[in-house]
Image 1 (cartoon, rainbow, N blue to C red):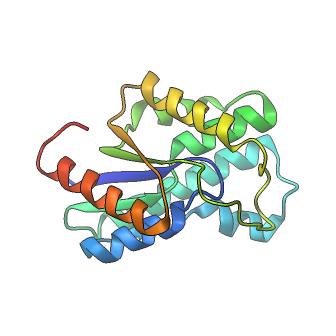
Image 2: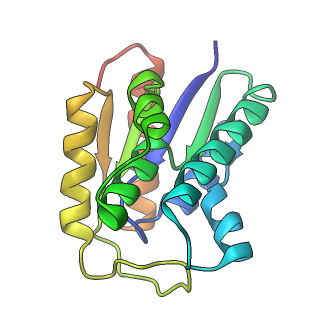
Image 3: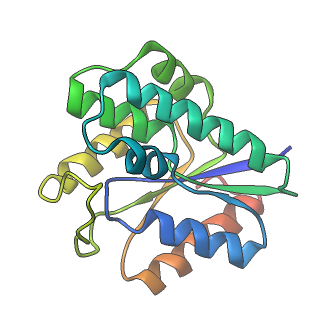
Length: 175
């Protein structure tokens, strides 16, 4: 059975870089964040319904990529992102996203801390609220009793910590 590892957390915390690097290190596939592709098409004028469509697109891409994995699949985002994003922007979350968040708990979550400098990007929206968002992520993962660890520090330090956490997980240790 493929073990899905979600790289999650607030914007501009190095999720994409970490997912790509871990994929290369372990020679396993990774799934890019579908929201970026989707929002490049429609822009930042998205609706409540768009968030569910994005989550569905992400899940579809994950399932396709899982067929190419031998043991691990690194996912640059997960249902936690869709759930928190929807709650922050619209004050609510679709039933489907909420159900998927609770039903499809990943094998391991690498929660990226907001201690990297903010990198401007036309698709990013929360440069000043990352600590609050990080707390929401941590609480959401705690609430579902997820196997997660916080990845912090410089890019190099993050990668070292992430590899250590993944290796501990592969050795059967609950982090």
